[in-house]
Amino acid sequence: MTSSDASPSFRLAYVPGVTPTKWVRIWNERLPDVPLTLIPVPAADACALLRDGGADAGFVRLPVDRTDLAAIPLYTETTVVVVPKDHLVTAVDEVAAEDLADEIVLHPLDDTLEWESRPGLPANERPATTGDAIELVAAGVGLLVVPQSLARLYHRKDLTYRPVSDAPASRVALSWPQEETTDLVEDFIGIVRGRTVNSTRGRSQAPAQAKAKRPEAGGARRKPAAGKTAGKTAGKSGGKGARSGSGGPKAARRGKPRRRS
Image (cartoon, rainbow, N blue to C red):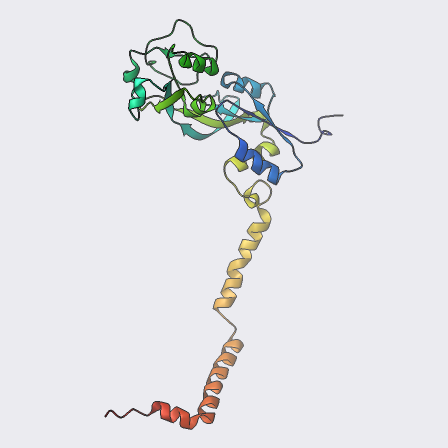
């Protein structure tokens, strides 16, 4: 069986912290005959997966190399510091990077935040993943600065977090290989951008024709034909005359001024 004979499908990669549930639900409603497969991927490996054809599109963290990958920025996340619940940081609503100067701040290998100068004191070793770093925070080894979605993803009852006001933010984007912008990729782009069913690729012609006819119909209502206008005018005047003739005395009494005592 050749690739053209295969049933269509769509493979969507997503990095930790991204929740694609809403977009997947809309996809299943609009394209029920095209199965969508979700592929979780570490943030550091997402772009390589797209280049190697392991997914048709993916939610990634910027920046990406746009020489061969297209990207549509979607939203920017708040950056937070994850701390034990009994840490002094929990006494305030937010902190600045300089407030962490005397703290050990862990820097996992899969970190995607781009710092000019990292806050705090470095640990002896870098944890392999953000999940590993969370475990070290719980053990009292140090603190961790991450996008808020990752703090929620790795939530523990003994940990909490606070926003870091001057930390670099993490931006999430939809990305795909530029040379592989297929119709299904276009369909998913439309879903992510919030297009309606009638405005997505290849489905806008009929509504456009319907809209073109509406002003014409509206104009007909605003400017009725001369014959109809004359008929209505005659009917109104005739009706008034008939009421006047049959109810003349009553009409006269209604027009007679009252006498005041």
